[in-house]
Length: 494
Image (cartoon, rainbow, N blue to C red; front, side):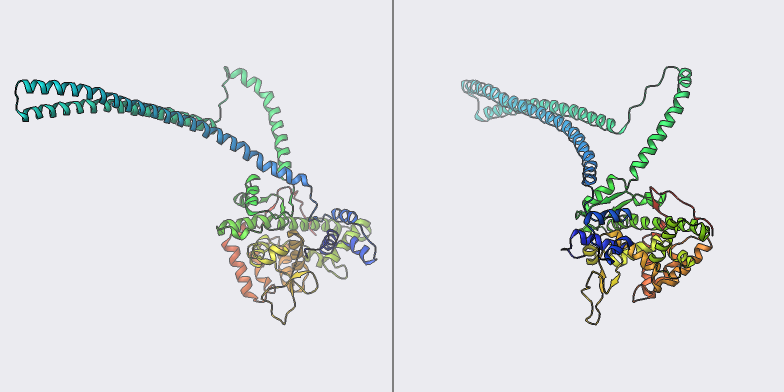
């Protein structure tokens, strides 16, 4: 899409991509639709609008992300502040002890100097009076000075020992305080035990049932709140913000692989700095987290349509309501089926294995880092000769194709699904999928990947690369993943 397109033109383009017949009829009859009218029709047809998303959604997410961060920051600041206070007190005590030691040594030297000077004078006078030899006098002075020095060292040693004792006690106190602080954080407080077991058992029995009901209600409310759809606005989000969001909503691929459920978080575009992630594993996980809900959502929409189709086909033509007939005709047009062939509609109206969709998205978009993916939300590298697109840099002069551009990522996923389900080049893919459906076998990527050799010019070599991507990244683990807010409807046997 061109950057200078107006908001109304973007809405018209979305109507064309999603094949909204009501808008197309107005356009064909040259009737002018206002922007609010276009928005109303698109919302009625459940088409996601790229802009003018409720600002409160973003504010809620910012508050949701920032509030726990601020609270945690305050707790950490208080914790480390108490440690620093104790540490400063510890340093102050060392300082005082050191000053005391210096003062003791200094005054000891002064007093000792005075004592030595007086003793030396008296000794010399005594030596002079008794006419002692010079060597004997020197030895006496040396012995006296050495003794004085030893006494000084002993005094200093006692002071140093006292200082070390004080530091050790301070250290022990500090360590105990740290341990207590950690215990308060980690170990939850135990509830006080009741005095008598008999009385508690009697009183608990009627209360336990009520508590169980309340807990179930709370869990249901919590579950409803947690699986609400989240459409991220087109705000050029950075990868760091995206990773923080995943952490905040506890979006973990290991959990998804195990539970086979994914939260309905829909990104409208890739982060522009996705390629700056140094870790290849983290880059791939971030890409899968963005694409997986979009693919699961489109597959769920198809499964809902199949359930509705099975109910309508069960009825005779005369028993079908006007609304059902209109819906059926709309689906015939959407899947490009002539002569109202319901058997062909059943073949085409079916899911794309998630492992195949993820592998092709990774291959065609360079794990979300290609120019086409970042500039035009083109995940699957679909070509166009008439629509709005991006010209490949390595395109030869003989060719005039472009890579189809999309307003949002989900539009690219929908177009890819329609391409595999309608184009004549993927008839073998649809026939194989239909046979698996008839046998009530799992529709998996490994069973269908070899039928997509027409998707690229390299043919069989292309399918081998896709198979390698599926195996190396364990993409078959996501095969049966559904949205967390999905109500499973069993299709009627025909």
